[in-house]
Amino acid sequence: MAVPTLALPQKKNYINAGSGLKSWLLTTDHKRIAILYLISISIMFLLGGLMAALIRMELLTPAADLMGSDDYNRLFTSHGVVMIFGFLIPSIPAVLGNFLIPLMIGAKDLAFPRVNLLSWYIYMVAGVMVLWVLFNGGLDTGWTFYTPYSSSVSTSEVLPTTLAVFIMGFSSILTGLNFIVTIHTMRAPGMTWFRMPLFLWSMYATSLIMLLGTPVLGITMLLLFAERVFGVGIFDPALGGDPLLFQHFFWFYSHPAVYIMILPSMGVISEVIAAFTRKRIFGYRFVAFSSIAIAIFGFLVWAHHMFVAGMSIHAALIFSLLSYLVAIPSAIKVFNWSATLYKGSIQFSTPMLYAMGFLGLFTIGGLTGLFLSALALDVHVTDTYFVVAHFHFIMVGGAVMGYLAGLHFWWPKITGRMYSETWAKLAALITFIGFNVTFFPQFIVGFLGMPRRYHTYAPEFQVLNILSTAGASILAVGMILPIFYLTSSLWSGKRAGKNPWGAAGLEWETESPPPQFNFDETPVVTVGAYNYGPVEDKIG
Image (cartoon, rainbow, N blue to C red):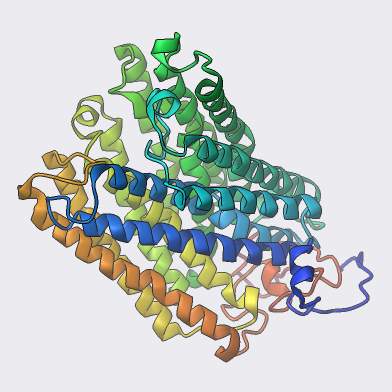
């Protein structure tokens, strides 16, 4: 029996709950804030993608045709900063997490609605600062800000960029805090921990990393700022500092940050696979706890980024072993997803195509990560395009494919409209092909010794670079297509109804798009997640 707790004067959906610009800019509705984030990070994605296109155009030939070395340094640095801090880290938590967490647990909003709006404004302030840097000469330190070059040598816009990253960190911290408190305190009656969808487990683990890791990055940026402005000897050897200390601080955050980007996608994949196989996720508890294990292990492996930077062989061996161990919880997820697919009634709708692409690309990215965990091999490939390929297989093949799977899966819930399946499937196929043609050749040129971060290279690498640039053109088409058919669906798409996929979960029990306060009555949960079993097992 449902227990009524909300006395709502109207049943307007969030789109119609005040249509003026002011109502959007002052909203505390988690769904509207998610859409504000969607618009913001989409701009960042397009900007970062344009920079990637320019990078690939420059690398089409061995010589420097489009730009000099300094301009190239600023270009790939800006690409990294915009894509990582402006898009990848906030993408799923800020958009899908904001929209779905209250719906999935049966709540009317997040625990701190005003703080949620504040986190978006903080993101926007930092984003505007990054854009100002881009149009005011840019940054040339690499997105890792390595010292002492960033603290003492570079004449580019280091200070405003570090300040922007510092400010943007508060957006992540507030979002993570909001999610943790919401999941702990606002679950509907009967929504126990082991009845929660796996997306919530992944977002909970991600929020822990946000809370524990992001302050370390913020402090590191402040120390860099202090050394550059006041000449305090922290990282610069000329001032009595230690540049390796910066690397330890930076990677202590930045390797867990990889899981801020990938864990939410893993949660999306669990939801999509369950919906389109009509099965419960195999080994639910193992998949749930593997998210927590990834968050914990993620803080223990940072120094594998520093195998060639100078550390004792004993420390390097320990970090090598830990880097192998962190692959275990990720492997558990992949094997359990594969077991869920076995004998499932699989429907290859667009979200499932992106999910299948995720499985293949993320697996390749994870396996090549083991290569980089091996000391001897890492010494050979660490500063080559092998690392670029590995990173993009994880971040684009994993995080972005997961984001697109989730966006297509919940788009009917977000907007109340269906998109063109024909165009969407075509985009998924083009994206998968374009991605592989772009980045797989980079494994080969990297293993052969082509260094990363250079705008010129040996002529024997040109054929594979031409292939990579051609793949980037294909990938761009696959990434741009969703902008058109998703946007057009807002006017021409057919009505979605509550549950166009026939999926299980509380978010599919309310209207599409949901009412302003999500539920007229607080739902009561009587069964576990992914209830595709007998008819008598229902969500009440």
